[in-house]
Image (tube, rainbow, N blue to C red; front, side, top):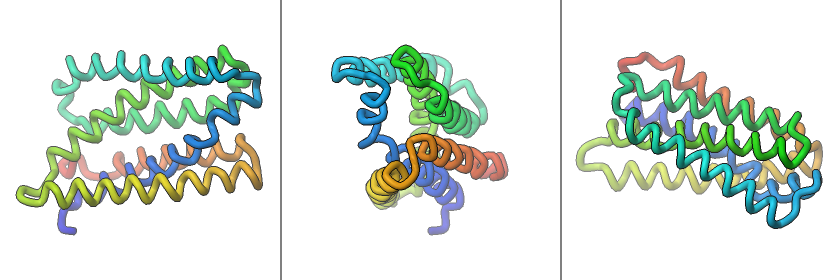
Length: 184
């Protein structure tokens, strides 16, 4: 591929998707271990999505005014890294709601900004090819990430998982930050 901007987005967000997928199949078990019920786990997911919606509404209104949209993507990575590392310390159900709000805020910053950057750098006439490449990265990274998360929790702990996830999100941010501003 001769598109360095998309390459940077594929790598950074591919690493991030891998990290995020590590927790997806395990979150309910983690929450249940600290006393969550089926209803509170459902409410935790709802709160994350409400926080995301509120953030996306803000970006819908003001996001195009940001000259360097890659900083929104970086902020999304960093906020979610903070949310995941926060799970080390948030060991009560009310504290998990705080973590979910942080994670929803990060997702609301990161997801639209990634899509905006991706759309900006698509190769004309290769849109389906590039979106297909991204879908392959999403599916492959997600499937391997889910398995890696299970391995880490089985052989180490949820705490180790949260540190690894946060570290990977930080790596994703660093990849984007170290690229020349003219690239993205």
